[in-house]
Length: 144
View 1 (cartoon, helix red, strand yellow):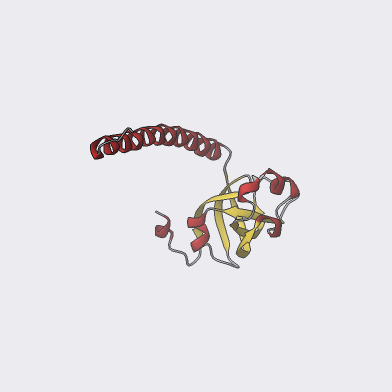
View 2 (cartoon, rainbow, N blue to C red):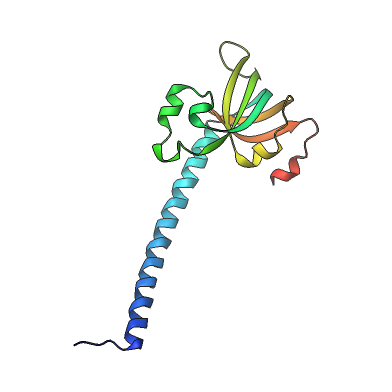
């Protein structure tokens, strides 16, 4: 019968932990570069828009009022989560058709301080509100 001493078992466990940490390090750095590229793409397609915020709620995607194409594009493993959804009337933008009511997915930091029934100036990228520029009665220093 082959018996391992306590020190051999400890060395094997430490070796396994070291291998797992190395793998996690490389996966983390790969995901960081992927996130940086996504943020850069988001900044390139963003524009500043004036909105009149009608309502804000945390809703599931199927209940949010977003377009069917957007709902289908969201991965299945996050469809059950609740997202910060802002329903707003687009006032000043380069969007054909003039002012229209739309639902936007909002950044969680911005969602916390977004005022309701107030005109705000925000940066949007597609249907995602990324930054709050100005709003009456809101301290924007909370975002930093």
